[in-house]
Length: 613
Image 1 (spheres, rainbow, N blue to C red):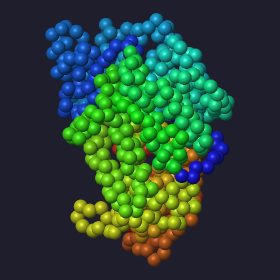
Image 2: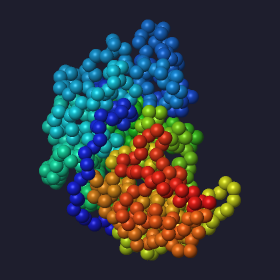
Image 3: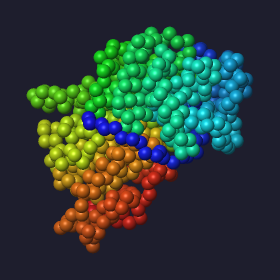
Image 4: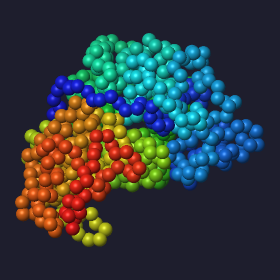
């Protein structure tokens, strides 16, 4: 992939209310006392064992999950309460029976160490585990008192949810207070990344401080690995590709020398939350390595060449609450998945789709011609099997409180994008869409554009179906600013599928043109933080302007001329305005505010209906 350096332009606007809602992604308290805890993975609502109370979980004993108090706690005359999963219970009546806070006898200091108890930062509502609250009073957002606190909040509210390798925020703060010198470099990186999401603080000096620290000698610690990893991700979004690759290679090399690629490294930690953070750090390194390879960025130390046996991460709500279950090994995952089990964490599913990408999708374009058809079928079948195996209740992506599963959101998006990569020719890759778009779509055995008419059949090519699957993810109220920087190159694949359909495949329609416009808007909002997305938005917009001209001689329906139909679509692209179709499967969830930056056109639905007539 040809990735060229570009200087970033001014960043976006201030973030919205940083208080957020109580959720898996926002809650950040854990118990760093080093005690082992075990919790069952999230499972379907009708599997009651997933509702084990905190008392039973801490003892590693079976819980009958009776509400409002289990039989064991009643017999032992102990207070019974549940750290409730925001996605585990669909029945509102059952949800209402679960205690939202621990008993008063257990409501002492959250952290047992003397250093932790002296922390000056008060516990805010968004520092509590998912489903807990301090009291029954309405939550009031308190503005950060210092610049450092503001930047830390911005980092955790926006960047961390998509790259959850650091400990939960409150837990992280306690460790920084107890040993500030060990976290000096990592704190500089966090402040720089947080500044990208606000205009209240200039990023220039913070960027220079973080970059200078990364280019010099850093301590040989896990915190340095995490800092280099996070900084390499930010450098990619800012189109500083040489910095990105250098710091990523350095992070991998340091992690391997530390032994983070071995299960025993995390297992040796007495604190289960720190152990989980170390596992997640290693897996985030593998994600980034896989994505670099897919984008054509060569690494001097591909992580695929390193042997590793790190256990899989737990669910996000478990991580945030500090109730870390017994980790699942890779071999256990493969065995249980082969037997049809599906009760795995969202990060486990993300790891699996990245493995499919690395082992099957990446080698496809470079495979000999006589091997391509077989490799294509294997890769596509594995991706489809992955999409089928993710439980339906997880594929909903949004819990009853309106919180999106950010990790699984990216995993599902990656699955659809990989189906597109299999069907798009290798020469048509990179950021310069204007240069390779005229080459046209692939024509090999993977091109199946014939129209299949009949009940129950989708008449569109499979790449259009994959693009639709990607776009449908944005029905959910996912904050666009929280998308990973690497999502920009992924959106190129989706936009290319729709542009090919309109220009080359004879499937031109207002629906596809509107989806192209919608993708441009996503990239534009994301580009407020990341120059890479801003460049991609410009590329897609210029290609759309050049090739999506109004057509003549096309009948759109009674009383609607071709010029009238296309005027609603092309005017938005040519004049940089936004329109949203309301009935082609791209609208936000009911009773949820539309995604930021999107408006609704009152005139568009009639044109869509006219086209479908």
